[in-house]
Amino acid sequence: MRTRHPRRWTTCLVIATVVGSTAGCGGGSETAAGPAARKAAEPRHSAEEERAAEQAALAAYSGYLTASREASRDSDPRHPALTRFLADPLLTRVRVAIGQARTHGAIRTGTLRSDPTVTSVSLDAVPPTVEIQDCLDATGYRLVYAKDRRVVPGSGGGRHLATATATRYPDGRWLISSGAAHEDQPC
Image (cartoon, rainbow, N blue to C red; front, side, top):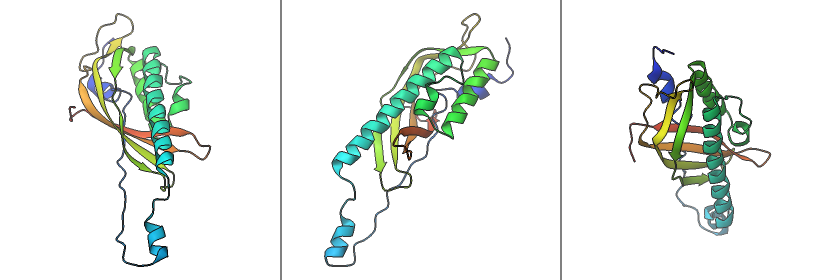
């Protein structure tokens, strides 16, 4: 099977385009005195709540990577595990990328290594979010043609930075809603 622009659709599939945004933490200066000012400066969430959010977000991220690998291996954009760990807009982008690979007769094989860390927790945001940074090692993770297992030209992977945002939804689930693969930033 021959493709005209393999790089276009393979880049999107480097782990189903982990596309993210970075969240900033705002802080104000304390100018008022008295008990009301001190109460406003105190954290609204305990360290335990933040740790629980970090753990839930990292579990969702790990589930996302696993579900994406399974869906990409099977070339199944409707793989049921995707909706357990992903939310839009990332869910749609992952499904489109896997669907494009399927259209071209390609699947993912091999091993994707991950080493994520939480960079920020924003429990007061609406909705609450956790930002994750990862060093993805895709050197052993290949996009190949399903028919003959030949590597798709231009689809080689390396080690690069990835970012993701986990969002807590009203039902209490933490889902990965956005992410970015920063292939130009090795790690």
